[in-house]
Image (cartoon, rainbow, N blue to C red; front, side):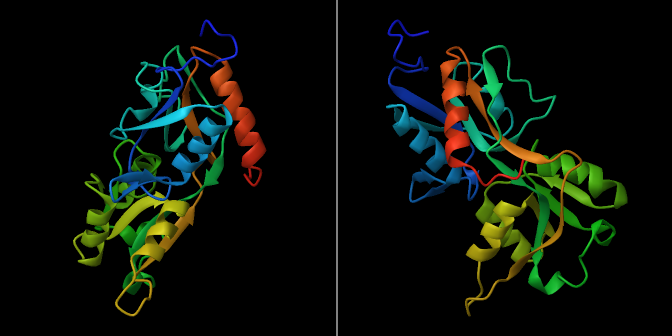
Length: 236
């Protein structure tokens, strides 16, 4: 706790340090060397609201949720869902949810009439981010039916390129991310080359949350207040 009772204690004084994974547009991504995204915008606005500067640190997705509890940053953000096995440690907590998403597969538009549901992916290759909800969903929903789950995402650009070239058959992401990618990667005539298929909820509603350092309990409390004030459209 800060000696000044009016100042929230952070890893670095007067700075909100955010750890994020940048291959997860539109939540967090890089553009011209700048880290942007809806998660980043929300947390930057939150930092401004509590009079803190912002520092953003790039991390791998695997274990991203552990960073605040380890004292590496104040908040981890990358469209994360709370799972029992995602242990935050004693010095961090999950925030209240700020968005509800559903699972989906991004496929070539030319395949939309043949790749409709899980059984259609027998013998097909589905790429997912390692340890993500898409990875968990892929193992449960598609792998038992004969799909190959590939947990490797060098970059979203690379995966979309592989998809368009026919090297893989689908990219597993939440509907928000895949809708963003479908709208971004257009053909020479400005038409969508990619579409979403098999849109479905997980067994437990996929509510996105931030992992928040709780050494000073006012930080998660203030963030939850900010989420309640600004994210009123969530269907939780």
